[in-house]
Length: 150
Image 1 (cartoon, rainbow, N blue to C red):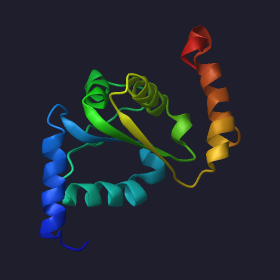
Image 2 (image 1 turned 120 degrees about the horizontal axis):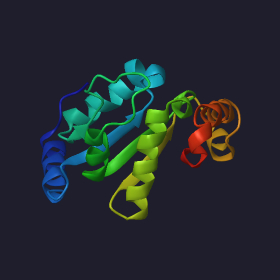
Image 3 (image 1 turned 90 degrees about the vertical axis):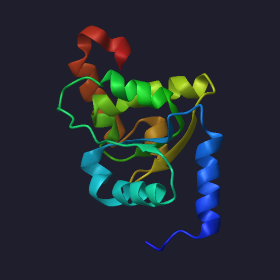
């Protein structure tokens, strides 16, 4: 990437200082399997190079584990959330738990959310068809005893 101009550097530092009540400027929510080694890595690097403080996926995640309180706290402490909706996003209970918390913060007007549709049609997400319908169907089977979670 190109180096940051002094104008960009001053605007990014004022961005961070103007958000002093926030621990993070941005929380990235994504399905690593779909986007981690491509789009998300490039976005993460570009944001970091501009001095934006990001809570990323640095923690080793164990498949099948529920979302940690560290992540839930980071979402609440982030001014912005970038949600990268990809084909397999909805297949992850972890991603959906993050999204639920992000939407909760959005409703409290504490977080601004930017959705990015990566290799998925926005109408598939909105109407829960295609890969999203399949994922929710599997969650319904898995969470039979706790269907309100789905």
